[in-house]
Length: 184
Image (tube, rainbow, N blue to C red; front, side):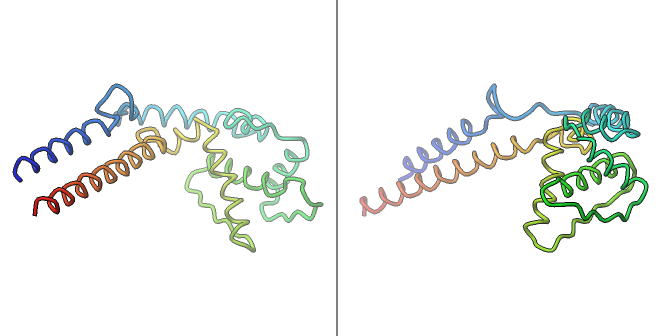
């Protein structure tokens, strides 16, 4: 029985060794030091504020979105009148440009908060997705927010490896239970 435990322990160590990619040549992103992170965030801040005066250039430079003239006019109107209401026809991109405008305002001005209010939860989620998609498209915004040290991809890889280890542990312990049952 002691030999069986030793074999199981050895298998467990092998599973741990080969299931984490950070111990091999591929895997998690390289560690970014605090000084490097600060430097990257400062560069990102300069890039975010470079075209703060121009809506079209800012959106093109930051997350590669070209605004049409009506959307630029809507941004200028929201600059002049912050509590503006838009009663234009359906499917003209009113919500999208409003959320992109708020993203630019929050990025270029210090100490800003954003509350997304919509009649239905699904609409709020769509409005939030405009922000998240813009951040995902933009390396500058991602750096500015500070997601350099541990990306979502690396997080999903780690969770996948933990799930794999759990499955392997369950199989090993079921095998031990089966062997113990046959030995009795």
